[in-house]
Length: 323
Image (tube, rainbow, N blue to C red; front, side, top):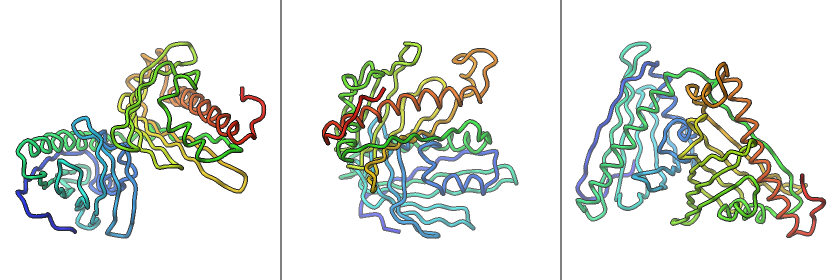
C-alpha cells in the first residue's frame, strides 16, 4: 500500500450493524462491480488489475454533488474480513485518501461494519478539509445504510438485468457519436421530450431528460454518464422513476467480422412499495419486472435503431428506415 504524503492527516470512522452473516457482508464489499447497484454514491467501478488478495480498481462516484474519478489499490484479507484501500492519484481537493473496511461478526446473523478513512487536503486548506469531511460523512453514511439494505433484503427477484442488441452496417465511431451526443436526442429521438446535457470534465456527463411513455405521459430522469471513446458509455440514474430504486446501464459498441454490434444493458432494483401505486392494486413484483423490461427495452432499442440509421446513412449502407 502506498504511504500518505507528508501533511496533516485527518481521520474518520463510521459504523453500522447489519442483520446478515459476516461473510455475506464481506462479499458485497469485496465485489466492486456490484457497488453501483448497492451504493448510491458509486456511479461505476471496475477492475484494472485483479489478484487473489491485491487489486487495482477504478471508481467514479458523486461527492457533494460533483462527480469524482480515481484509481485505488485494495488489499483483501478474506480470513480477517478486512479490506484496505488507498487512492493512487486523488482528485482535488483531496491530496491523499485511504482507509479500511472492518467486518466484525457479532453472531451468526449479526455483523458490525466499520468504515475508516484517513485523508489529506490540498495545501492543508481548512475549507478543503471541511469539504472532504462533509463528502466522506455523507457518502459513508449512504454506503453503510445501502450495504445494510442490500445485505438484509435477501430478495433477488427485485433485481432485474437484461440486454438488447442491434446490428449496424456502419462505423463504430459513428454509432458511439450518436449515443455520446445525447444533447441532441430531443431532435433525434421521438421518445425524448426534453434533454439537458453538461460535460464539465471530459467524458463525464450529467444528463437530465424527459422521456415519453407509451401512454403519452412523461417522466424525468437524471443520470451521470462515464464515456470511454469509442466503445462504451456507462451510466447511473441519480433520479429514477418511482418503480425503481436503482437503474444502471451500459451502451456497448463492438466491431466484429460482420460489422458492429450495439448492446444496451440495464440493471434495475425494483422498489416494491411503489408497485401498487404505479401499476395498480394487486400488481406484483413479477408485473413490475415485465413492465420495466418492456419500457426500458423499447426506449433503448429505439435509440439504438436511430443510431444504426445515423451510422449507416454516413456509411452509405442504409436500407429502408427502421419502423
